[in-house]
Image (tube, rainbow, N blue to C red):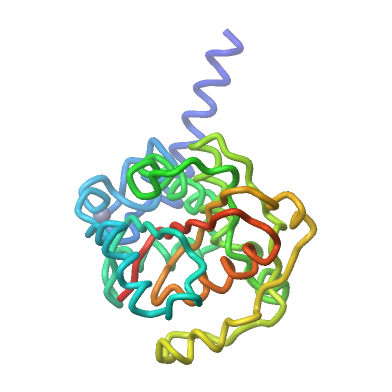
Length: 241
Ligand SMILES: [Zn+2]
């Protein structure tokens, strides 16, 4: 009886909440019936229509063109969605980044983890988020790459190393920079964190929300190789051109 009463009470509370704050798809803005965390932010048709990123082989070829032979520290790169400015996947990134949606980041990370064997078909030992500068973390409340990495680690049953790397300098926004400027901008931006000794002789997976030229991921990979990592692969939710 009590259980039924509680269930009824919860249903009423949920209904009331739904009236005050119904969930809306962040892409088409339509109200959504949410059964999962992901569905609170994006409806099924919008999710299924998101443009897919080019295959890992093509992304790696792009890296080979961007970084001269000995400067490329990444052994592979995969991404889930393709992006043009203002296109639907960007709405998801904005929601993760600026609406403080850690649970959304994690749910997206789980979706990314589900296709990880196709994107990075290698044995991996640990998952490492691209760190943000502590000042930016304080301002935003959390690191969106860490939310995504948490979901990837969870869905692939891999350890998550939050503090393997730290960001030494708060690099300004890179959106207006050329590939060469981006490369110089982030070179040396990353250093060993508290968990750095754990990466020695390990094959690790770097995770970020958006990859553009790969400069940030490659700088992280350089730092990880210098800390003794065996190989560094990377994955991002979105590949921007
Ligand atoms: Zn929608």
